[in-house]
Amino acid sequence: MILIGGRIEPAWVPLAEIININRDAVALTGEPHAIISQERLEGGYFRAAQYWYYGEDDIVVLAVKVLFGIARAHGFEQGNKRTGFTAAVMFLALNGYDLVAPDGDDLGELVRLVVGGNLGEESFTETIRPHVVPRP
Image (cartoon, rainbow, N blue to C red):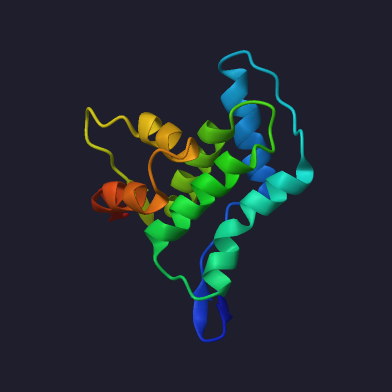
């Protein structure tokens, strides 16, 4: 736990783990694992931290920034959305929360809509907010 400016900084998923998440995600489908832009990957990865440093404390908002920072950065050849989603779920877990999506919700389709510019991050955030619950 790190106290910065009177606020407790959230636990962030290490960049090396983000890379491992992608490696595992694409291995399941036989796609290649490759980082095509380290700079874009790091920029997307640090997006949520920048929001926190500028005052954002809402854990759901930060998780969504993790997801879409990675997904939109396209730092990997394949699996950017899957990697972002998994990293966001891991970020929530590291900070004491679970994402419990109800049966029938197609969060993958919502992620595709946001990345494609057809749904705002704010709408996605409010859609998942009721499903982010404190860990027992």
